[in-house]
Image (cartoon, rainbow, N blue to C red; front, top):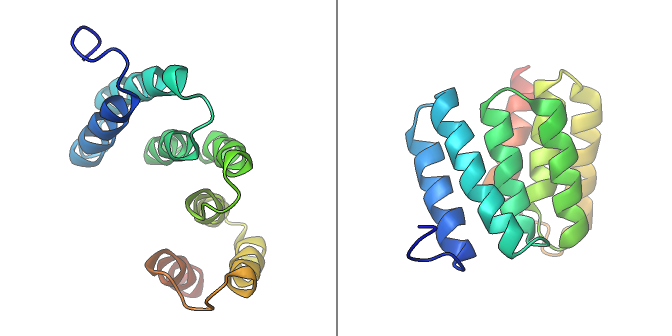
Length: 131
């Protein structure tokens, strides 16, 4: 990819996402996919989706504190993108900060424009109720 498509940030992002989801959380593979994302970030440093994907893969490695910080950074690039917000709530849940996660999830529902639950919202709500 570096040789044939060195300027295609979306290719690095999409291939990284594909292999990260398919690898069964194998550390060696995720470390490689994170390097692909680093290439995408070099080409488009303020892309919130790329940063959110890095955070998601950090979650796959169990690095929830680092992932939370990356999700925060991603949310600063695109305030309308809810993926980083849901990711931050997921990190809070995994760190057993359930009350804080519940409050953030409730706040996110209040500020949403159409007041309908997304699949991510329902999933996080179910995890909080289960715990």
